[in-house]
Length: 253
Image 1: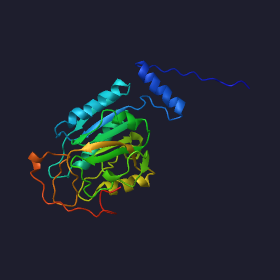
Image 2: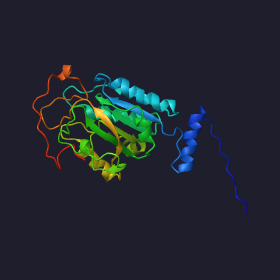
Image 3: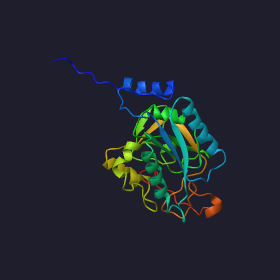
């Protein structure tokens, strides 16, 4: 019996887009109409000095290499510290899914990524991945992520901070019409990554990459204010922050 050959034609905007598509075929990865397309969602618009320019430059770097990239600020829905953070994150993945992006990069307003960070993370082709997040003051602030050994490739973790995280949008398909993210207090990273684990997803950290966060982390169960969503001028100066235990505490991988 003769084998039937089915014709398939695909048109591309430019040679770079064709090269990205062909790369996917050669690697045996799932096809996508807009391979590696990424919706960069800034969680808020209260940028710290230099952070917006750094995030935009990262998007420019990806675009110059043929990637379909968009950058948008999620409106600040917080009336009290943290009370609308989950709503903003939900809007981010809903926008990414509705517009057909393959990836969603959620960034806080206080991060300064190297210019090639997005491209390097996309090449890992992981469902959930983050670089090592370090703090500008050089302190670990009770977290294990800033102290992870560098240059060891991918490391699977149970949870990590969400300051800079790349998701495949397919991760959120089960929640396309039902919100996934809840707003603190209480609904921290550990809680949400446990929910993702129930759907078979575990986060990875790329130990070959590091992104600097300008402000120390805050914890959802204390009195401090939400610095990553609203600037200090809006909510005032932070109160005394209680540190979590070094192991097994909140916000630790």
